[in-house]
Image (cartoon, rainbow, N blue to C red):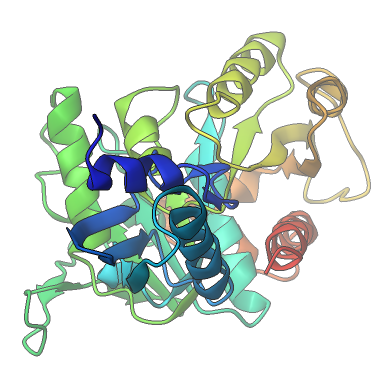
Length: 345
């Protein structure tokens, strides 16, 4: 015969947490369940502070217990946040790609800048554990984050540049040394950067994922409150094929992260002296066709210009230059992502 705790957990499986599309037991949100007579107490741990769901979940949980287990139950529920370091972060946006070499990090950096130019407080986390490039792109390779002397748990103060808060594994390793880590070690490093960084109040935390699909991606989307992911591709067929694989991974039932859409980088070449001209060097509208077939948003078509490479190498992201022909593309990308996420607030 099932004991009362088992019956209560069984009843709570009828309580859905809609942002994750599953029940609070399966999502490991039910903590510290105690039963004494008709007194039932437990905690519900949220991935991040939630202003809408606590009261709704409380009513649903109380109703499930009283209807299925004990109509006279006295239910006490505490609400927790799993990741205190992310308590002030409103939205987490991941930037991924099916393969390397498509300009994913460049897109992540310039998206962060463009969001900041829209008036938001923005941070960027370089989760590309095996090939961190964010320090180079911001020209902060020689900087070292320091510990917050006032924090009880010794959190790290991120580097700040251009109004952004920046964290990267590249700040803690020898840039000349290749990183050869097994999956669990890489996932642990990602956890430490998320949890041990003092992010403070942010409207957006942009996360630059490693290319491809693997442990880092699973750790991120399963353990952290990611609001959505955008996939970067280039127009070539081989890149588009890998972007399809990325869509497939993030659409899996157990992952359930919102796909914001597709970003086509290097869509066409535009000479600086002829900004209105477009030369489709790698094929035309491949990203648009893939987005249509996958039924996702085409968030942006980013042109290829020489100044993008130069700006990345010099540590001055191209989105800082409002006269650049690609400034508008990154601005529109930021506006599109802002609209998608804030529409659901």
